[in-house]
Image (cartoon, rainbow, N blue to C red; front, side, top):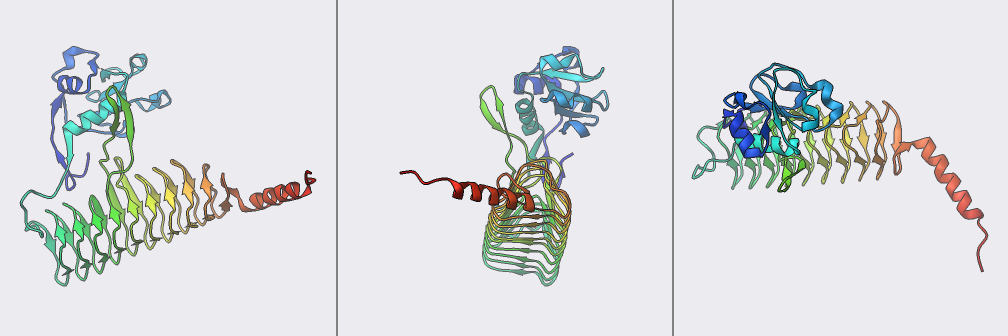
Amino acid sequence: MPDPRFFEDLGPATLTELARLSGAQLADPALGDQRITHVAPLESADAGAVTFLSDPKRLPDLGGPSSCACFLKLEHAALAPAGWALLITSHPQAAWAVAAGRLHAPRRHLENATAIHPDSALEDGVVLAPGVMIGQGARIGRGTYLGPGVVIGPGVSIGRNCRIGANAVIGFAMIGDRVAVHAGAVIGEAGFGAASGPIGVVDLPQLGRVILQDGVTIGANSCVDRGAFGDTTIGENSKIDNLVHVAHNVRLGRNCVAAAYTGISGSTVVGDGVAFGGKAGVADHLTIGSGAQIGASASVFKDVPAGETWTGFPARPLKRWLRETAWLSRKAGSREPRG
């Protein structure tokens, strides 16, 4: 279930209603009154959830209680577990996004509320610069400084002795002690997710959180996206430079560093003590082993073993890149000039 501190529960909804809203067809109309309370990814669907299947490779993940419902294509329906409620559609992911919008809504600042909501809790010693806004249910620890124009969303928890720079925006996040978020950084906005539907491309729900552990630094104008369903996590004492993007569901280990313009794509897992040079890029769903180093402007499309140094486009081990670069240089220099 999405964290109720950050997401409002709009359910339940019947399968008949979800089918109508999404344009899906309920395979067994007799199940139309079955009530759905929340959305979930395929691997964690539980009682009362609706999920989706769009990739046939994930058919083995179909399981769970018979009270689950699933959006899927007609050709996959015969392979679904007995007892599941099936919603047939040619656009399962987009249909699931519609269902998510019916069942959950992000909590926003309340209309006509004061800048510091009376339902927020600030320990002694919190310092607020002019223009700070703090949403309902937020918690701010002792000794924390919030700079001019900072916006803290509903339900956000910030620990003690933190420093939040001017015009930073923090939502859907739980932040430890001694964390620095520099000016203009955005923590917890929706990550990038889209799917094609019958009316065009639709945004996918982003129902997770951001966890910044103790001692983390986030540079100016950097973005850390909240998880699509789980958490985006920045490990203890990791340091993020200015203008860095950490996408949804990334898990960054302890004592990592990322120089400016680094981009880490969604669901990548990074071990402890990893260093990213400036403008390094990492594709999604990869694993970067502990102690690895990624060179400046490297483009990583494969898992990187622990302790190795990779660079280049596409990125490969440093010694291999050096040999290939030297070989290309020799070949280019050996060509006879024309004319």
